[in-house]
Image (cartoon, rainbow, N blue to C red; front, top):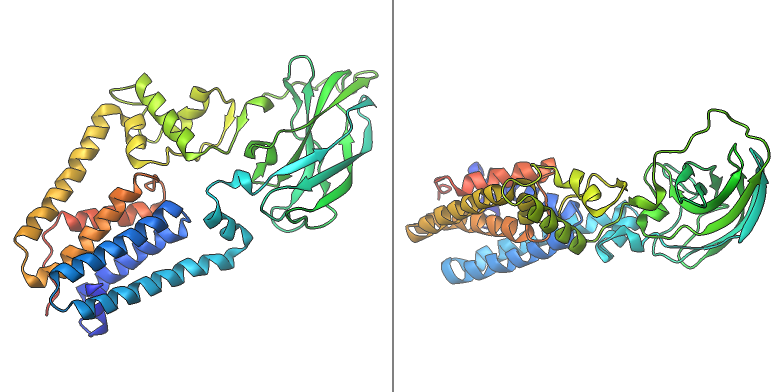
Length: 375
């Protein structure tokens, strides 16, 4: 806020650079659509207002500047709602599993000849919060997987797609004639129905059970090259809540207490640790401290805490000897560092280039005795 005030009073230079840096950092947190980050920004704005009220002689002017800063950030937040209906859902709910919920009505049993293609009547209902688009870049389509009935192993993972008759909104139901192609070899199968958002995810991966139609396939083998897929459908897992990720991080740390599983290896390790054959490798622990604990063990975690303690100690020393002209910089840095430490409790933001670059920039400024803006 004091830097915004300095810019408004035409004292640009370093004040303008600091304002741009802090606005970019706050905007990056907002655009990541993390509710924890949004809550943290609100908390630090209140903290800034309290510090201004307690320490700054010209507090009325500073509070006006702080209010203008809050308005600018609110504009950034409001702009996210123009990105489509999923932006609204992202702010409303934490996990996409509640956006894409489906109820299937499918036949109990069928008979096919090997390689036969047939239209099967299916009824599906949208019981989630999001709209299923039938066209565009990532349309929703009806598909299926063939599982061997006795073992549950996947025989054919990528089934034929059937386009939706049109967009399907929450609460709507559609009847379809699904195009189904039987496997090229005889046997008893489970025809597992599944919706897919093309090039993004299967609905079963978002927590929707894939209902099974028992199918007997008869006839001569149609393809000598047909083999089982290596994907174990029952083991797929793509939507995991924050609390479960925290538990997995602690569990991995207990297995590797001193050096962890390796930096940035939590996302590669939690799947096999939890027994999944297929999992989303972009997930982190959703907690900065638990990510370090699982990835680098006690050694890395202690180093992280010592590093943050050194930053806090440097800020505290500067507050004790600060001249009035230094207060704007110290206020900005204290609030920014507080936001980073608090946000780390509910998120891991070092995998995003905009946020980790700005995070290290802020921490570097906090550890450096930067001269205050000229008065």
